[in-house]
Amino acid sequence: MVHEAAIMRRGGGGAIVNTSSIGSRRANPALPAYGAMKRALNSITETAAVTWAPDHIRVNGLTPGGTATEMIDAWEAMTPGIIDQINATSPMGRMATPDEVAEAALWLLSDRASAVSGAILPVDGAAGA
Image 1 (cartoon, rainbow, N blue to C red):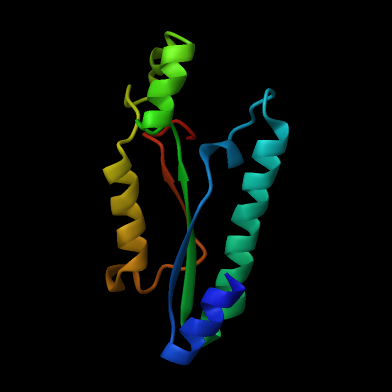
Image 2: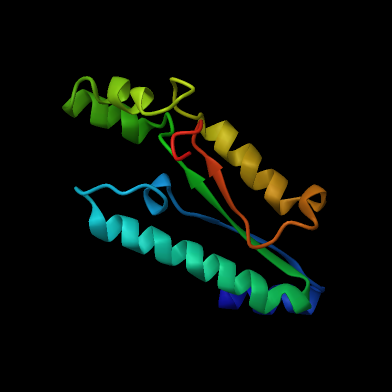
């Protein structure tokens, strides 16, 4: 981000979106280091937002929950039923699609989100609520 911000300063500003995880907001006893690292990313995102706001650089983060990707399909092949387990943790009863996560990032990067900085936006079907 430091290198991105340096380039953005020369251009008059910009926007950065970091991708964290629902694991930053919901404890998972099986993956404590993963959760800690993702929580740290959220903190760095918020700190960068405050630090670089005077330079007209917005910094936000996404915390996707389960997302229907090839990685999940591979996990399902190794652990049948995992998709059903992930879907059961979402009040919406399903995972996000990669396009849904990308749309959230596109909005945060766009001028339509020009007053949004320091936000950590869940894209998890209310699973982290």
